[in-house]
Amino acid sequence: MSKLAGVDTFLGPEMKSTGEVMGIDTTFDGAVTKALLGSGLNIPEGEAVLLSIADPDKADALGLVRTLDEAGHTIYATGGTAEMIRAMGVDVIEVEKRLEGGSGRTVVDIIEDGTVSAVVNTVTGDRSTMQDGFHIRRSAVMQRIPCFTSIDTARCAVEAEGTGAGVTAGQPYNIKTLAEYLDGE
Image: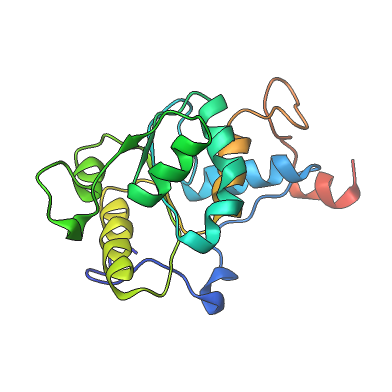
């Protein structure tokens, strides 16, 4: 997506099933970890993350926020998302949306200056929110940092960073040849 200047990185249903990598393992967590590592969508442990969650997705995001907090991530969020996070009793740093035009640093600023190492931005149909979301996602792609547009994928990425599920030789995934996976060894 970084090669397509000015194009929104949000994937519709027709593109979500089109992947660039595949993760295969004996456990779900191991397979997800491999797929995320292979696609460069891992969230660095303990690094700062920006959340801008659409209202319909906020209830689904509660587990993600808890997991991020428990894993030691610094959480930055836009206004409504920050309000939700504060209500959970979790520390959050609120940042302005790009189009609000305030005097503080905006979501685009903290992406471009390297403050955050990953972005979770779910999409809504509201026009001004879509414009902000476009700039958030575009900035993340241009900075080559992971940008998630669905809560479930973001949750998998955070959980994969330290689960240890299916551990072989200290790794959260198994290393085998394709033939070994096919033979069930």
